[in-house]
Amino acid sequence: MNRKYIFQYFACLTSISSCSYLYHINNLKKKNINKYTYNDLKKYNNKDIGILVSYKDQVYNISDFIENHPGGQDKIMLAAGKAIDPYWNKFKQHTNDKSIYETILKPMKVGILTDYDVNKYKDAIDPYINDPIRDTDLKFHSYTPCNAESPSNYIMDNWLTPNELWYIRNHNPVPKINEKNYCLSIEGIGIKNNKCIKLDEFKKTCKKHNIISTIQCGGNRRGEYNKIEKTSGTSWKGGAISNADWGGILLKDFLIKYGIDINDKNINHVEFEGIDGVKASIPIEKALNQFGDVLLAYEMNGEILPRDHGYPIRIIVPGHVGIRNIKWLKTIRVREDEAEGAWQRGLSYKRLPPFIKNAKDADLTKIAAIQELPIQSLIIIGNDNILEKNDDNKYIIKGIAYSGGGRGIVRVELSLDNGKTWKLAELGEGYDQKINKAWAWTFWNYTLNDKEIKNKKLKLICRANDSSYNVQPKDIEDIWNIRGLSNNSWYKLEIKIK
Ligand SMILES: Nc1nc2c(c(=O)[nH]1)N[C@H]1C(S)=C(S)[C@@H](COP(=O)(O)O)O[C@H]1N2
Ligand SMILES: [Mo]
Image 1 (cartoon, helix red, strand yellow):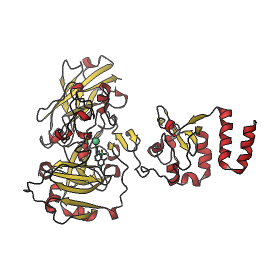
Image 2 (tube, protein in one colour; image 1 turned 90 degrees about the vertical axis):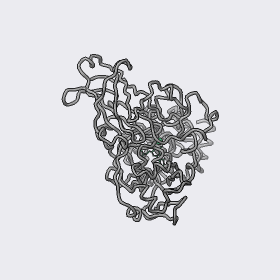
Image 3 (tube, helix red, strand yellow; image 1 turned 60 degrees about the vertical axis):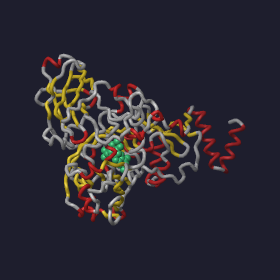
């Protein structure tokens, strides 16, 4: 021991902080231990690179532990690449039982935190801590906020997507709502007595209806744009789309009940604001359309609306882009103009021309916010895109088609030769919806014949037509936009035949 250590050793006897300093120095010498800063940790937040967390001034590699976390994998992933202190502050079971640290965390130690700040997380509690536990089969892009795709190997098992496999797109932590304190406000032009309606009373105001509606995120398939040129936002593959049977009250019944005058020319939009502050509006023509089926939903596939999907009430705007389907509804506002804010007037849901690379070069006031989505289709093969024989010894290619505005699917075509020739796919579940009220997706399939399966690899392309004979654009470059919205170009997928 040199003089410096001897000094530290004595300092250690009187002060714990210098004691830990000595401990590090010794460790550094012994194991050549890794040093990290809070910033370094950030990149170790996924299974590919490895998952590191810090606790106090130490760093741990929890990659092999996450699946065994008693509180669920998605909970522990909240802390991936970060300090676990804000979680352990709240969930005292980790510290009440000292053996948890000694036997579980300590053996995973890989380094120290050089910029450890005792006060940084002293009283902090992560705002995402109350997010619900989620199914680990979802394809997570992020945990805070949660962005997860419906898994491709299950998405076509049921025409109605099971609630736990529904895609999740949250901008913020999931609000924790106590039904006793919850009420829904309705205000704006023509609303007689502004009031806040309790959930119980709300459910009794109007007749209950069930509407089957698909929701697709405006950013679905953004990942393909990013291969052309980077866009901003989550790099979704094709799984930001799901279908459910929603139970609730028709918005039009509700608005009329609360006094709106349907002939009032000043009314142009209805705005919805969520408890998390996210808000958006839809045109009054859709809101009041007696065939529009806009629903204040409190049930999803026969269950109470799950927290991730908007408990206790969300608005379902069939045929319109995901963002208009506001969750955790707090206020309904009848307005002369569109909602304010990024999700309506900002760049977030405006599809700019492909040649604009900087939003500053566009006059956003002249570009419409996306409401109805364009015609879309996808090929769904499942994990690793390996096609296996079904029980009848057949190779069947399956997929989904969906269009905005309730436009039904009239045709899906499939090409096996890069678009030179096309085959007609057979339409499955959903094909029998009313042609102008087809709020839900349509499944399709195509059975490969012997000639078509000579190759062990196939390059597939699909494209659909909706009831207005809108078609999907061939080239993704023609619709590329800086925000990466509404990619509905021909869907291309390379598959292997097993
Ligand atoms: N209040 C609120 N509503 C919201 C969102 C949100 O973050 N907050 N996300 C929107 C977006 S962008 C989409 S695509 C859908 C996703 O709904 P889901 O999570 O039920 O699939 O909800 C929309 N409604
Ligand atoms: Mo979205």
